[in-house]
Image (cartoon, rainbow, N blue to C red):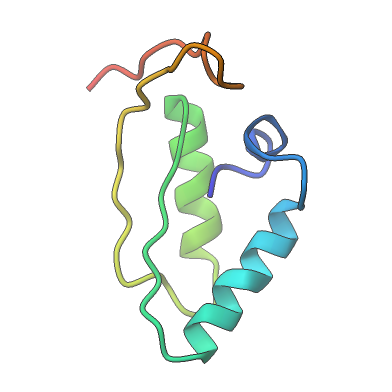
Length: 82
């Protein structure tokens, strides 16, 4: 999961809204939701806004600093300062 604006940079096979529908289906199935991914401080804020405005909040939201890996779409991403 990422902020709405950055999501297309992470994945192009589904939309951010489709991802939110998946999270809702997972929760409806009785599975705890853990969601978190943000590539810049602004993206983390955007992601937290999306999650905070959901009818039910995820049970946990880890905030990890991305490790850019050569050959991946996010290979040139600037590291998030801790």
